[in-house]
Image (cartoon, rainbow, N blue to C red; front, side, top):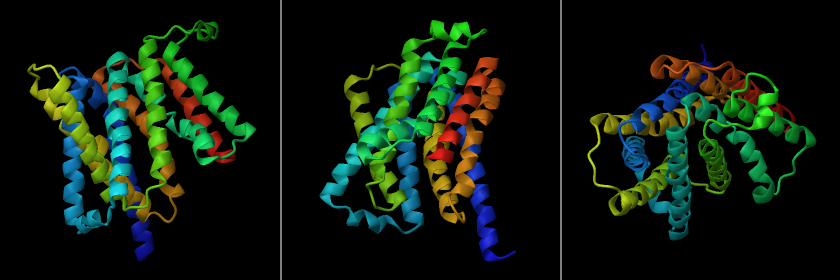
Length: 299
């Protein structure tokens, strides 16, 4: 086996590890939110991730890269850190507190199509008619998941298990897509950039918790859940995914594995949370993935 072949195999291993970790995130959100509020949970998770990124910079001897950041760079990172992880996870955690995990997770997965829509006004990209069709297919999947109809006519009734929850889940895709559109303008090393973003975000969250947070005890499960999310939804998994992208012959070899996440996540949700996975969830998820794949094909 050549060195390139070995590296490519490692890329798949890293990517699959990230996929498995992300597949547990929805269940971790739901379990943790039973024991702690949105902001304290986010504080635990963000501080854990910030620590992971800092240790990674030390281990890879990239800490001096922080000196290359100008004042403008730090201000830019402060803005990106506000979007993600601060605003994004506030919105998505709140969505999970209102929706069953099997609804919130697939709806949140439409962010690649939201990214396409935001690229039109921000990056001045044109959109093809086939891409519009792909977006409509995926959003039909969102409606199916949110209304869980037993017959086609039920879809038109738009009866959601939680209207605000669906709105927040969709809103989170806007925040996440906006973050990645703006992130393309940042040319700093990914690991250094993540650390600075999360450092700012952790500061924002800490201020909110200290100023507006209610002084009430929380169960140790909430702290443990925050640490788990910080490690395996954000910190370690982000780094592993970056490692997969760098090790692959082309990013397309590993990026497509991301489509396994929502399906594996449903298995974890059923097994860990005990949610009965509805047929409408499966149908809606297939429509969402079909729309994303179609958009990638024609885009």
